[in-house]
Image (cartoon, rainbow, N blue to C red; front, top):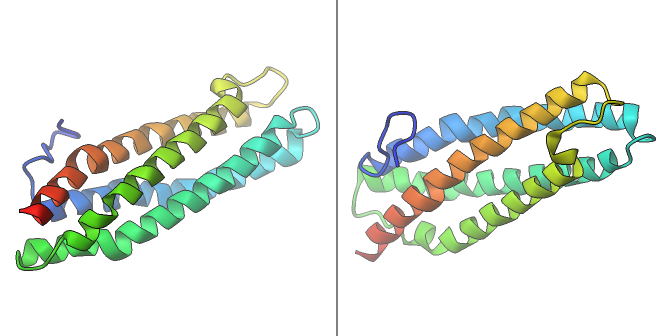
Length: 169
């Protein structure tokens, strides 16, 4: 499936990994600290009326830790192996291919945390007794969900099958 006008199924693998890192990983590196900061401020202001904000705060920290660890693995091992392979096809993709099931499991766990945050935060339909700034933060969380959905699609549906096929054949 083409994203942003590019059919990543036929582009060089390293182009795809560079796109994922520069678009989706960069977005996460910027947005997660901002979201944690914003939600922390909301907890401080509204937790007595809305203790569910404390749960969302905990879940967001868990999400950030899971994403940070996932990105480290991709950026220090998987993606550099793809870069090396595109420069020299004698380089092996097997170590990355062997880690793909773990990456897919991490994607599922991240998706579950996102769903728990959404449910905890009223499906992002903010109660009237909370300030508009919380609605803004919920909007940012929805954007994060959309970006992660595209990110996971690019990896699970395009990158990983291509890496596995090249590693096997």
